[in-house]
Length: 312
Image (tube, rainbow, N blue to C red):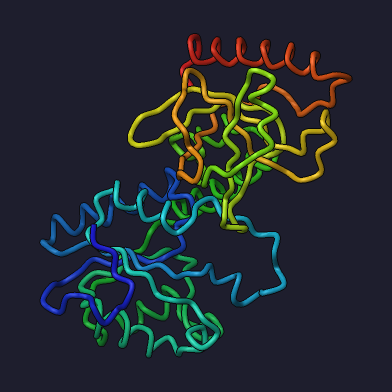
């Protein structure tokens, strides 16, 4: 897959099947649509294209809305879209000025002049252009003059996508990462940099990697202790992760800390990916560090049993 960050760089000598959307999380509902676009491209000998906007339009049009948390960073989304077989991912900067583009200008300048659209695949509820005046009916009435085929994603498929996105976010906010996995089709993950901590875990016999996620919009699952896996340099390790403020040592800032089983390498300043398998308990304030260590021993045993006995 080729990432196009300046639409003027898009090849001029190809015909395309295009779909557009935010595709946050690239869950199973999204994948169904994207694989359909890929298949259409193959059948029609056209290149498959995903057109997406960044930052998320809601952050631009509703700047006071900080509640929206995204399931994927742009880099994570791009990797997942690539896995579906899409040929081109086109990123258009979403600005207030862009949001004021008339629907006809968007179609002619973006879809036709730059993306060479031969087939457009959109949902029944898709809106675009100034005041969201562009939609499927608008396109259907003008498809002949625009010169491309128009295919509608069914209401059932679109509703599945919307419901899945909502359910995934709700499940993660509630710590139900196993339910989120069922909807995503894979464990929910986050990518972050390992930063310096206070090394208390090492003193307790459970050294942890402290993960800093620079993207403030990235959804972090609920506080608690989780069975997780860590991916680094193409390999994976099992581990246990705590998300929370560490009340036993009177912590005040939320941290993401993972104890990686049977792992010795120095990860400081390295980027790792953390996959959430199952939540095992809430974060608890213990009366002493000894009691904390005893609980960590039980936690590790429980997590190892999860990996041994369950299809996670």
